[in-house]
Amino acid sequence: MVDYERAVAKKKKALFKELFQLLPPKPVILEVGIGSFPNALYLGSSDAPPEMDIVGVDPNEFMKQYALENAKKAGILTPERGNSLRLVRGIAERLPVADQSADAVVCTLTLCSVKNPQKALSEIRRALKPRSGKYLFVEHVLSETNPFFATAQRLATPEHVQAADGCHFDRQTLQTIQEAGFAEVKGDYFELDNCGFLNPTVAAVGESQVRCYMNIGEERAQQAADGDAEVLKDLRLYEPNPENVYNAQSASRSQWSFLIDVVKEHVADQEAALKAQEKAQRSSSGSSGSSNSGQMPPVQEPPTPSAGNKASILLLAVVFGIIGLATMFLMRKEKEEQERRKAKKEKKKHH
Ligand SMILES: C[S@@+](CC[C@H](N)C(=O)[O-])C[C@H]1O[C@@H](n2cnc3c(N)ncnc32)[C@H](O)[C@@H]1O
Image 1 (cartoon, protein in one colour):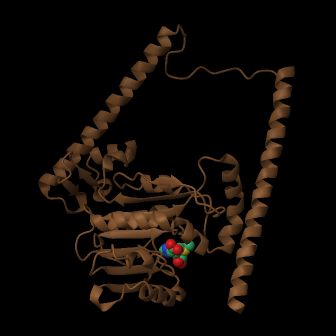
Image 2 (cartoon, helix red, strand yellow; image 1 turned 180 degrees about the horizontal axis):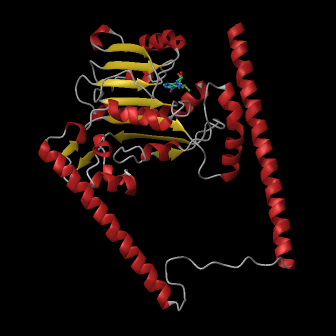
Image 3 (cartoon, protein in one colour; image 1 turned 45 degrees about the horizontal axis):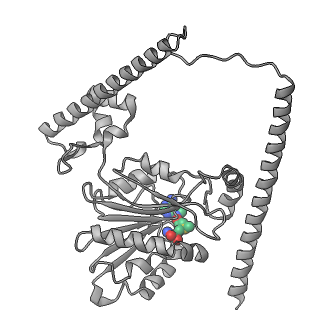
């Protein structure tokens, strides 16, 4: 991980700087999966605000001593800074903190390892202050740009999960975050040098404010419009004016009726959009002279193999053969790299 930390340092520095500018005085910062606390370097920098109340959560008690050492080394616990650090045993899927208590959640290289990323993200949202909370993340993910590499990442994951404490190479974490109900998460997607399968990485500072009608889906939206209290319970809606954010759980009578109205409006909008789309499809298929009613795309008969098709099949077989070889090669290289790192670690230990 030392190599990874070095490669991602510039990016992290910029992200933490961005975060610090958005924080209120005396912020509460929750770090999920704090591990040995490599982020102490950034929270201890001169850009960080004073009087931070830092809460670090991790299931691995063994890491506590390293986290404390790194906090001290980074100067976080220097008395003049007025910071506090609490290290708590716990898991992301059930954060041991009160609702809406954190000004920021920091979570780096951890959603690859948690058992249930969706649950972890819903806990992160619960822990964040609803209007102002910020979520800083850095996570390695499945490649979206290189299908060969992505195949190799998928194939290598089961063994890596066993060897590296549940770490997955094949998660699409940015999508999971974007579907978790945060407002505006424009994650950066980038490659880091010499980081093997811990590539690519996604990172951003997200906002905790929720635009529920983008996330609840058609069926749940309909249930909410029908007044289903269970569905409405954990929704927060916002009007175009960002000052007006309503949390259904603590909504007053008038806010509650506003929530229902907004969801109804959303359902109506979606229905209108769907009708317009169907109409456009019908008129475009009508103008091309097709006898299809516009409901379904035309079905093609499966072609019978000709000489040209046989050549294509042969070509496909060759391509798949090459993909297979490339995948095996990449997996072997990754394994060698892991063994090299392990040997290096062992050597260091003996010294
Ligand atoms: C790869 S380490 C990352 C540590 C640190 N955040 C970093 O950036 O280097 C993954 C961390 O996630 C922790 N972890 C694993 N499962 C977890 C869970 N369900 N909830 C919270 N942390 C978890 C591990 O104990 C470990 O400290």
